Length: 293
Image (cartoon, rainbow, N blue to C red):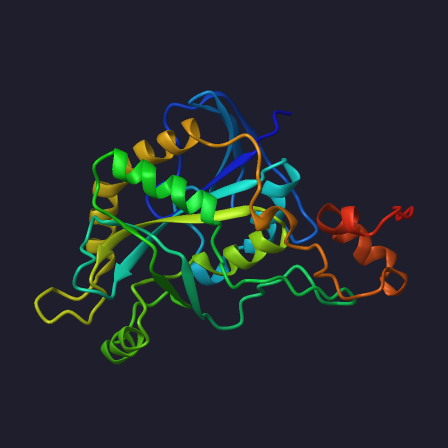
């Protein structure tokens, strides 16, 4: 089976990557269930890539129902070290217009009840999320976006709401008062889980609307969001191809060692079952591996 170091999680409107060669579909099962869909492995711009449609083919899975742990774990099991996420967002700022691209650098979590960690149940770890997106991957995304000629915003805070309903006007105004720049439904818990899995993670956010706060624009509707997504997806595909062509071979960012000194639990108190379940993530930090069969 072809392994890949780069993973692409396609959001609404991006269910496949045109131009991939040597394509192989892989169905995986993880300790956290099955991912959203089969993962498509292949080569794009000469780079081995693993592509996962976040909502499943045909957009079957709601943001609140996404198997985020299975998705991230499955990509990690294929050797993925860097994840580029594509998602639709609404703008909370006048200067961020529909069809712009935003490369956020911060997150506000307004989700409810999503399981945002691989840890717990006997193994405790506290990773730093001060900078929730990989700075190296963000810079690559910004440069590639600028090179395709789209209007791109470097940095910004993405507020992640639960959904699947869109915001009320009161909520939209509240989020603006917090200084958030865009609003979406899927960057969390993906960013948290990717950091725990020591994977670089960055989001290419396609602005589809002004949410419902803007007095001069119609409030966001599903039809508006999907129509603007169709217009923006071709641009995103061009950005992704440029990013892949300029991807560095090695990683020197903090993402690659996020679990170093973050695991609080003494290994002798970890059950064999949990150590086996999380082995893909933690074995490198536990010294000599025990037989957990």
